[in-house]
Image 1 (cartoon, one colour):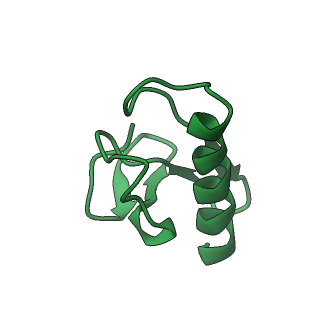
Image 2 (image 1 turned 60 degrees about the vertical axis):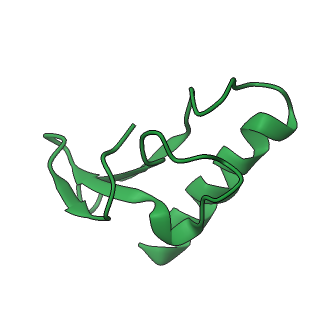
Length: 72
């Protein structure tokens, strides 16, 4: 799951770099179909301070299974 969190983090960091988001609006997520889990950017966390470990893992019903923040 850590590798997927890192990939989602890196993809999210590309959004402001390419002018695709304003403030904290917008996100990238990825799914691990075998585990039935989704990794998504945390809601309201500034891109400047965000880390890979801040990514939120949710199950297919949207329940947070890993992370300190609300999912986007």
